[in-house]
Amino acid sequence: MAQQTNPMSKDLKSLFSTLAEIPEDIRIQSPLHQKQILVDGALLEWTGDFHEVYSPILISNEETGATEQLLIGSYPIATTKETQEALDAAVRAYDGGRGAWPAMHINERIQHLTRFVTEMKAQRQHIVKLIVWEISKTVADAEKEFDRTIDYINETVRSAKQLSNQTNAFQVTQGFIGQTKRVPHGVVLCMGPFNYPLNETFTTLIPALIMGNTILFKPPKHGTLLFEPLLEAFSSCFPKGVVNTVYGRGRDIVPMLMESGKIDVLALIGSSRVADALKKMHPKSNRLKSVLGLDAKNAAIILPDADLTHTVREVIAGALSFNGQRCTALKVLFVHHEIVAHFNQMLVEALKHIGIGLPWQKGIMITPLAEPEKPAYLKSCIDDALAKGAEVFNAADGGGTIYKSFVHPTVLYPVNSAMKIYHEEQFGPVIPIVPFTALSEPVEYIMNSPYGQQVSIFSQDTEAVSLLIDTLANQIGRINLNSQCQRSPDTFPFNGRKDSADGTLSVDEALIAFSVDSVVVTKQTPENEQLIKSILETGGSRRLTNEVSF
Ligand code: G3H
Image (cartoon, rainbow, N blue to C red; front, side, top):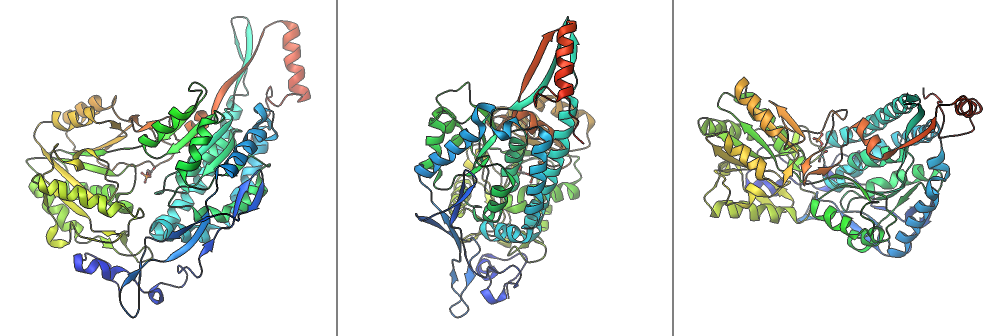
């Protein structure tokens, strides 16, 4: 039977189960072979090539004990032809802003979205299971991701109504009378990341949709099948062409979308390298708007007076939740030299008790990694640090060991600027610890970093914390005091500086990111006042209206 906690290297292999050991309700009964793509409101049968999806969760062969890959499904590898059709459909549905969707009052769009949420909720169990098998997220976290996404949609609806009501008002100034409302940009290309495939895709797709844009949406490479249960709902709940899927290899199909010049907004949660390359492909750089959530290397700064019991708890959650595969994860720890020995000891002790195992087992934090190439990359980071003077501080408890998709949490100490783990975003369960003496050391690190998402400061020292806040506030998006870095609650702005983001994605601000001001204004004369009144009373215009959203 698989162990759940603190395995040594030899045990990582034994954490994988046989098929018979997997609880029936989470077991994949048969692979999901997706045979349709959604283009122009129709679910088109796909007869071309398919990409086979293998789970990062390996299966132990009952007889031989060898670990084997499990095929969990396949999805279409569409070509540039279908991608062009999807683009044409989105452009047609937008129709220069005259399409049914962009021209609709927001109240009506909300009705469509409400129907979609009802249908989405009915797919909860199916989608949660696919998240678990495709990216190896724990069942509890996959459920949380689903529920958080539903909450996000509901909050977005609430916020959109509020925005609509606020912008019903008229401004009377300097002899002018005018009304400013938010209107859509046009066609939005949405691409989410593998680590929050549902949630982060929908944190751009839903606000873009509700503001009247039409959508091309490409699921992440790992985390694609989980959208299949939603295709029917997308097709039936929205006018044709409003939501279109783009399947296939990103490098083959996304360039042609950008090069067409017909993408108005690039909404990408991914790497800054990809964002850079895609933006450069667009022929109209001023027309293209970007909403980007990109790389991060969030630091924790742990001062001598920090409450170490609390700090260790936050650091473990911050660095290792979902194996450290969060853009907001703590990816480097700066620990004051006076306490670093004690801190390391407490961290290593606490790590002995974290759950390592399979997503459906109780109390699990560390699961197999979703990206096939990631274990080898992490090994290269560990080897590089060891060659340059660091130690695996928890080696006695399994740190530094890897078996196929399982990577044991690994504490590296002392880390310095010569090592690649100091600079690169590991996106995995490796915790580099840098000892420091002067506050200027972590500050310089953040100043010189190409990233600027978040930081965590652990201390109760008023003077030191004030100084750090004031120094770092103009470098990064969010400063967390005595808590790990994180995105939630979704009502707080989620953004980043430098290469970490473009735009802000809170519930409220995402609506602004996916829309633009439209002003209708006139000179304040009796005739013009009468004209406006008459338009409002007759309801002749869907744009110049003060219809209330309840
Ligand atoms: O991967 C980045 C996610 O937005 C992080 O969200 O901090 O709530 O886990 P979270």
